[in-house]
Figure 1 (tube, rainbow, N blue to C red):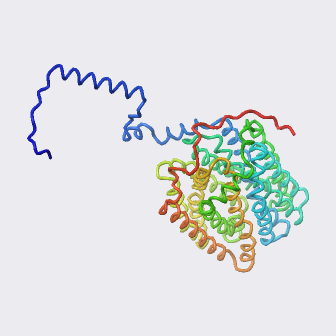
Figure 2: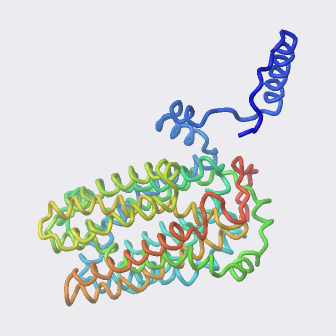
Figure 3: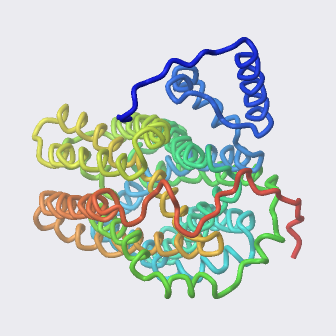
Length: 478
């Protein structure tokens, strides 16, 4: 406090007038420089959850909207494939070990070619990558239907691995380039959510397709002919999904500016960052590869469900996961990306244990739904996080490494799981999965939440695009 006693100051009318003039000038100046004076405690009350969500969706670019339309159609077709292909192989007299080998062939291919596919996606452009990838998958499925044998299955699984690697690696950089900073997480999650919702519709319909085909062909609904006819339908769906992809306007000028060796140089200069971003994906994939490719077989063998019942179960599961994916960006915006990843994936692990070891189908079904939503709803959130940590020219490299990590587990785990299933049942695969999921959640927590080594609030090396990238039309000539 001042040692001097306070003095009374007489305010004359002239002084009051001068003070008001200065105040008016100050207000005008603040308006000229456009200072953001919106109170923080007022805006959240005005912007409701639904309004904010709709505003983010409305900000999607035309390219993003066309991609989403194609993803809906493609997701529906692949939902049928995911449900019925394993049953198709088993109906031909092969066992779960063969299924494991096919999954391994597909995923090992994606693992081996991930880096070259990242370079190829940069060179040919993301639009061409989607067209080539989807077309390759459609042709591979058609060949497996027309010429069913183990050699054909193996070769076409390799083709599917090539195609899936190309499209998966192109997706992340494409969505980054065609989105602004505000709606980016929403676009990633919306893409995954719509694909899952469409997949649920495909799985629901796919559960009844063999029955309809059996009636039409006068054969059993579980015969190879019925499954083949049902799988043949989805080839048409994949072809239709290419229509909106052809309508995407591609920015070739931007693609050509990417230096060929910039991603490799970036990875060499930042090995620690890359390792932390990729290792949790690797551990998750090792665990997922033990049981996820065999969930339809699990419900048939352990809980004695019919194909139609499994189709309905999977359809509702995909729909629930789609809803979770749509909710994830709002949660990430409120609580933080890594916080949502750790919380949702950590909470899913107890339900995974219930799914694998509960003797009652009702408990297993509820656990299946909850685990499916919690484990997968944050996947696009983490994908956005990884894309934000690197420069634009290195995003394809990060996408390639993420794809390699994802496919590494799916390349080797299914073969090991198939051996365990034939000899010991599903208990060992579930135990392996639980262990690796716990390890991956611990990495997320200690590296990104507790350690905060890569803060999502201030991405490293990235100048976020305020608006989606402007694209110029380009004909798909040779």
